[in-house]
Length: 216
Image (cartoon, rainbow, N blue to C red):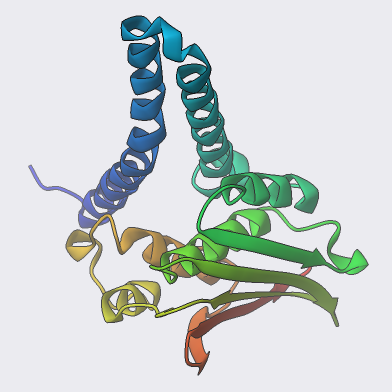
């Protein structure tokens, strides 16, 4: 019995994406449990325990809402830019990375799958900021195309060589890791639109991601 190598690759990518999601979710979910445990052991610390549980639950909810659009089938549909923007702003609301997202009137309707691509570009920008920083996202319309520009700015901002190779599909899927699989996915999402997503080191502490896709 033979095995389709493409099916193996798809399962491998799915495995690493699942690992990434679990890694990001385990922190806030564990913190909710810690808050409840603190409440049961020290009732006098109710305010602190409830606050910890509430903040952690909100963080977990923001992650799930973002991942639903960035990685799930919901992102393959026609997503209103405002919905994608709200999910992204919620993800970065209280972290070391801050997000500013501007949209031109021409991009208030995106083709199916475009919101998923943009959210993955934003997540890749966040991965390029190991010490935190700021992400500027811009969507504009021009001559039958939509232009996405995502700029990561912060100390030691960079895309690693492994992530750049995964983004360019130079890494075989079986050699991906939970750290590089997101860049691989972003590159494949851009390729769906016949576009090429390439990072640019425009200045020290700054990485730029840009792509143009058909507007319809």
